[in-house]
Structure formats: C-alpha cells, structure tokens
Amino acid sequence: MISLRHMQRDILAAIRYHRRPLLAFHLYFALLSVLLLAPFSAWLLAALVHLSGSGMIGNEELVLFALNPVGVLWLLISLTLAAMFIFVQHAGMMLIATRDASGKFHTAAGALWCVAKRLGFLLKLSGLQVAVHLLLLAPMVLLVAWSFQQLLADYDIYYVLTAYPSEFWQFLAILAFASVGVVAVNGSLYLRWVLALPAMLIEDLKPIAALKRSAELTFGARRKIAMTVLTIAGAVAMIPFAVSLFFDALGWGIFQVLPEQHVVVLTVLAALLFGYALLNLIAGFFGVSVNSLLILKLYHRRCQRKRGVTIDNEPRHVGYFAIGIEAVLVIFAVVQVAIALQVFAPRDEVMNIAHRGNSWNAPENTLVAIERAINEGANYIEVDVRHTADGSLVLLHDRDLLRIAGDSRAIWDVHSRELENIDAGGWFASDFRGERIPTLAQAVELVRGRAGLYIEIKGAPQMPELVAKTLAELEALDFLEESVIASLSAHDLLQAQEIHPDIRTSLLVHTSVGRVEGQPFTALALRDALVTPSRLSSVRRYGHELHVWTLNDAASMARMVDLGVDGIITDRPDVLAAVLAERAEMNALERWLYRFKHWIW
Image (cartoon, rainbow, N blue to C red; front, side, top):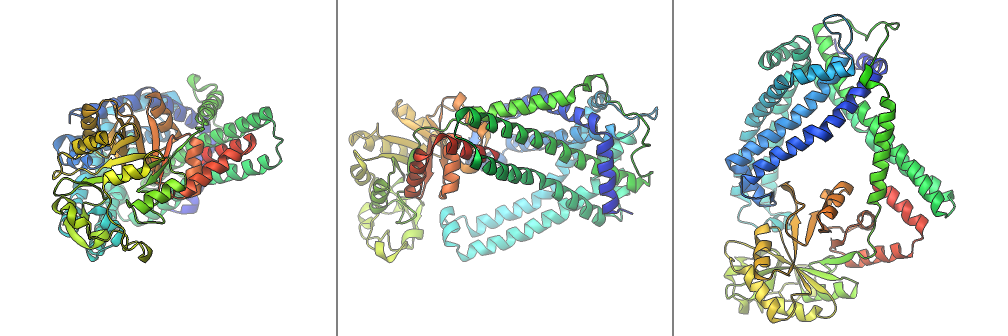
C-alpha cells in the first residue's frame, strides 16, 4: 500500500539521516558535470551538428535537420545523454540510502565509484527508454505534421497566428488529441518503467531485465504511483519560485530603509545575493534528493521491504573526500555572487528598435508607423523586405496579402503597379484606411538623418536575388552605413557580407541547436526567452552585440536594460523610450535594487 503521508515522512527522514553524504554526492556530481560530462556532451553534439555542414542550425532549418539521419541521431543522442545524467545523479543518491553487501550504507565516494562502474548499464538503460519513447511518440508527431501540411501549409504562419482561420481550430483539435495520446501512451510507459533504475542497482540486473522487473513491480499500482509522483514532484517544483518570491520581498524591504551609500549598498547586495545563491543551491539539492529517494521508497514499498531508514544510533559517515562539504557549498555560493555582480553591467545606451515601426498603434510596415516610431524616440526602424513580380522592393511581413488586404496571392506574383490600389491600413483601423505598402526607397527617404533601418530579409526560394537587390538599392540610395541587415537565415547574412564585407548584420534566433555565439555576424537578436545572464556573458566573450525581441511591456524591457543588452526590438517604442528615460533619472541605490530584483527573476 502506497501512502502519500508515509512516503513524505520516510523521504524526509532519509534526507535528514543521509544529508551529509547526499550533499557530498550532489557536489561531486555538479563538479563532474561542469568539468567532464557537460563539456563532453557539448563537444559530441556540436560534432554531430558540424556533420550537417554548419556550426549552428536555427529557426526554419531545424525542421530539415530533424528530418535527416544526422538530425535524428542528434536527437537520440542528446536525449539519451540527458536521461543518463539524470540517472547518474539519482543512482548515486539511491545507493547512499541503500546498504551494500556488508550491510553498511555507501559513502558519497563509494556511491560515485559504484555509479562509475555501472556507467555502461546506465547509458544502455537511458538509450533503451529514450528510443522506445521516441518510437511511441513518432505516430503522433507524424499525425500533427500531416495535419499541419493539409490544413495550414498554404497560409503564412503569421496570418494563422493572428487571424485564426477555421483550419487553425481544426489543427488545434488534432493537436489536443495527439497531446492526450502522448500523455496516455508515454506516461503509461514511464510509470511502467519508473522502478527500473533502483531494480538495476539493488538487484544487480541488466537494463532489459530491470525494465521487466519494474513492469512487474508497478503492475496494479500505476495510478497510485502516478498520483504520488505528481504530488511530490509538483510540490518540489514550487520551491525555486518560493525562494525567489521571498528574496524579492526581502530585498525590497531592506532597500526601502537602506542609506544611499555605495559601500553599504554593495555590501548588502552581496549579502543578499550570497543568501539567495546559497538557498538556491540547498533547494536544488533538496529537490534532487526528494525525487531520487521518492523512486527508491516506491521500489521498497512494491518489494514490501521494511519501512524506515535505519536505527537512530548507527553512525553515519560521509567518507574522507566529503569532509568540508559545507565549505564547498559556501564556495559555490560565492562564485554565484561573483558571477551575478559581473552580470550587473547595464549599457548607458540601449538601442530602441521599433518593430515594423510603431506597430502597436499603427499598421505595421507603413510610413505612418515609421513616422510615429521616429517621433517616439526609436533609433532604428525594423522593417521586412520582399520584392514584387517586377522586382520592386517593398515592406511586407507576410509572403502574401491575405492578412492585410484579403488577397491570397504571394507578393512575388503581384506587380508593383497593383500595390498602388491596395489598402494596407484599413485592416488595422478605419483611421488608417488608404495607407499603402511602401517601397524600401520611400522608407529610406523618410528615416534619413533621423533613424537607421533594421532590415529583415524575408527570403523565399521564389526570391533568390532578394539580398543582392536590397544591398544594391541601399548602395544606390547611399544608406548602407545607416542600415543593419537581419535575417532568420545565416545564409542570407553570409551572402550580404560577401557583397559588402562592412555591412552590419544581425542573426535573428528563435530556436537553435549548436553554438549561436561565434557566428561571423555583428549582432545576435535572440527571442526574449533565450536571453539569460550566462548567455549574455557568452555573447560578450565573442564580441557580438545582443539584441532581444519582441518586448512590449515595461517590466520586461526594464529587466533586459538591467541585464545589459545592446538593443530591444519592440512594437511599442514609446514605452521603451519611457523606460530608458526613467532609468536615466534613477539614483545609484534605485538602480542596484532593480538589478538585484531582475537577477533573481
């Protein structure tokens, strides 16, 4: 019988009793990951990416990569390595709470050695589980891909995400069905094999035998196991959020009464960061310990082994190598503080890059949107460039006119003369009825001497000369120095640099595999979810500018300003201008307070 209350009691008792060796192993694993496992995995996966002929694969290219043998192999290996890392950490903690053949508990070093000896079995167990999960997942993925191709492939994806055609809801229904299927099938398999790791460790079974043993042990109790795992894992997952909320409130309270003296501010800030880093490390250790021992205790329950941890008077040693683990934990926290203080380097000037002009209050990519953005303080106007059937360069985001004019024809099939009669503003609001799709030349003349252009190349196989045409027009208009060429495709940017080696380029990144940093471009423009303090430090080491897109609320903008990005791409340049003006008026104490808050979050 699996009792949630008894399970919680036993897990906490085990952590309390084995806390020092568990903590020692946690630190061993962290050091091993940083020094060996993570670098080796990164090297191996990067080598696989290089087999595709590129150091980085991003955005639309990911789909093609995932469909070729190298991509499938990369996915299989990356997931297997990730699973193995988890198994290694769980295995060590399970062994620490398990007696060896002589009846004694494993020390941290002993558990590490046992795990190292079984690394091959752990890798095989990981690979088997990942491979079977992917095979079961494949039919649902194919169903979703087929549905997308049948229902939505003829639409521009941005039209789908803004206009919500009926086919979109049909696709969502199929996606929901597939998601339920994945949860049911793959979730059932997870519960079937959830006890394979302790079975392999404790009963000394080989991977396939351990999977069979787990299926036997979980038979008839999988629903109860699922409820127990979800409840405890869910509670553990909330701990980091609780820590952040606590230090957020503590920081605000302290800084309200703190005197405005730099030495005092820095001292208190360092203390807060140290406390936050230390508590986060402890919370991480606690979370991993709970999840590891949860599986072990479930295994004990199903094997009907004796409950409890051990007798209270049995000494618990951690081994010679674990002496001083508290000091190591403090050192980890100090390193975290040092990194955090280095991250606090906000730029004096952050570029205000208006996404398609002020596309929040005016129709995107129109002259009125560009004019508003300039008046509201934008330094650069981001525009999307395509060309018409007769080669005229125009500003248009989608591949067709369906979203803005109800015309499903692709822009490369439309003559420039026809655009003179197409309303590009009425779709947004009646006040803008009569706005036209502007040419690149018109945009250049409007911004000349007032702002630069951040030109996204919206390439397509039907427009192979788009990059060359764009650069030729900018050169003819004497506007190359005031322009940044941006694209989701690295190939477009490399082509631009071949034509004009000094042109500034920006790689737009939504999702990628491989190393983004180190690409031969002036700037990296990352989706906001990809921008972290560690990513910022890495970008700085390679000498790139870092731009972030697309932020439309003041809080997100302020956070990125405090992190130190070089540019923010936004639909609301007026809001960003206000945030920057507010930052300029803050005193040193207020700036440190905001930086502390944003580092925590």
